[in-house]
Every structure is written in structure tokens, then in C-alpha cells.
Image 1 (cartoon, rainbow, N blue to C red):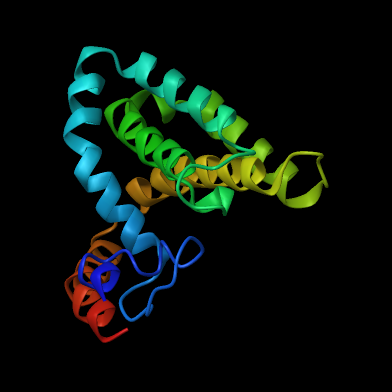
Image 2 (image 1 turned 135 degrees about the vertical axis):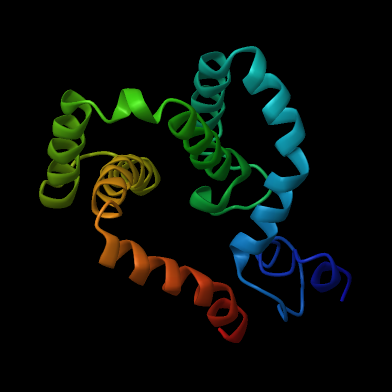
Length: 167
């Protein structure tokens, strides 16, 4: 029950016996990321590019031997990569909204969706997730300028947490 009380039962199910009562695997990872966020933020303020490069390096080192969870996509370094990239993207999103990034994102998404590459499942999913995130963020900012769409999404946003709780 201890792992259930601390929200880690789904995340640690591959490592030990748990009752798996609360949440999915990503709840445990979210808790871990929240706990290490102050450290990441402090390092990020000093040199965000170095933190991103170091995170990519750690991700690649531990790709075949994941930390904590044996599923590489659920591992600390894998989730940390998505987390750190998200922070980096938001900080530099104006740079990412330029036409070359949009075009590169579209091309990479199309390649990853249509062509069978020799990349691992984990790497291809991260690349697709990153470039879809860039595209959807840009599209989202553009369509939210329309009042009716903005109103609809604002109302849905107000309902999302109660819907999540029911789920």
C-alpha cells in the first residue's frame, strides 16, 4: 500500500509487487519530475542549452539500460527529455515559430509517419512527439486568435479537470 499512498504503484509495477490502485505509470513519473523540478529550473536559469544537451546525452546513454523502470519510454531519462525540451521550447517558442522550423517539423513528422526508419521505437516516438508538439503549438496559437474557437476551448478547458477526475 505504501507505493499507492505515494502515487508510485503504477510506475513501479515492473520493479516490484504493488496493488496498482492509483493512477497510471505517468503519475509516478510526474511526481518524480515535480520533485526534481527545482534543481532543473536552477540549472536551466544558468544555461538552458547546456541542460538540454546534457539531458539528450543522458537519454542516449541510458536508452538501452533505463533508470528505475525497465520500459525505456517510461524511464527517468526518457521522460526528463520530454520535460526539459518542453521547458526549453516554451522559453524559446518565438524562435521555433519561424517558417524553417515549421517546414522542418512537417517534413520530419511526415517521414516518421510514412517511412520505416531504423530508429528505435523510443527515439522515433520522441522525435515525432517533439515535432508534433512544435506544430500543434504553432497551430494552436494561430487558431486561438478566432473568438469563437477561443471561447469553445476556454469552456472545454474549464471542464477538463472535472472530466479528468471522473476518468
